[in-house]
Image (cartoon, rainbow, N blue to C red; front, side):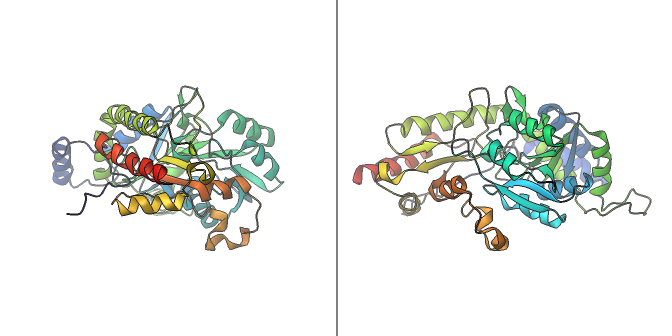
Length: 370
């Protein structure tokens, strides 16, 4: 009999019964997109994430594309290569030039010193990622941006609930972009959010996500059709109610992993600064083959044979992907090293401890055999 598959991740969702009354209401009214619950979801998210405003969109990529367009940015934008492809894709779609910077090998986030090296007269903004939910060095990035008069748009897709020195990461920068897909800690099924304190940006975004139409059928500028549905908003609102409970449970899963694997020399963990809190959207380890006796690919194969899903983020990094072939000769040593030694372990907020132990046992058995 085949073992039950342990998934890489699963969305933690509210009880279906908590949704039915609201869904019945919108079905009866016929107002199933961009209405009562979308507005309420925006208000609740702005409050939770520490900003004055939130604008909901159909997904995180459209949120980023529209933000870049509404900021009227030109020229170059500095971005890590160790991030999801949407960041650089959105820049290209908006006619901007990605400039890839290297990362800190311990936090996996963009290295502020490397940002400074990449600034030219053409630079207009910085697009850092809170990788796997781990807050960037926001203070250092803010100092650089003010020094050079640059905008900051944070990719906070992984970081709903993450805190930088006690404050939600969305409270920083000119805007922060969140994603609400099923792989995220807080999901709405699909969807995205722009968090900002800039009312002018908000006003433009509200028009931009309606294809640039201010509802008088006179499109004011180039936009997208990027509305959030009421169904998405309802799922998001109900999931937000259980979010803190989910995070507490998620931390217990992480602690169990780290305790189980503490004796294995050569397994490394992402460094989280003492004053910061990550939501561990992903739980990643690095493999030092000289110490473990096995490679990352050995472990990926062992997990697969035991019907356990695993994955590698982000390998290859963006500058080594086909679509960005013009950047393949860039010297990004920390990015290249990490992408060759990192891997994701299964994690979700309601993950049974028995599954955590099963994953760890495969790793421990592999270590003992070699």
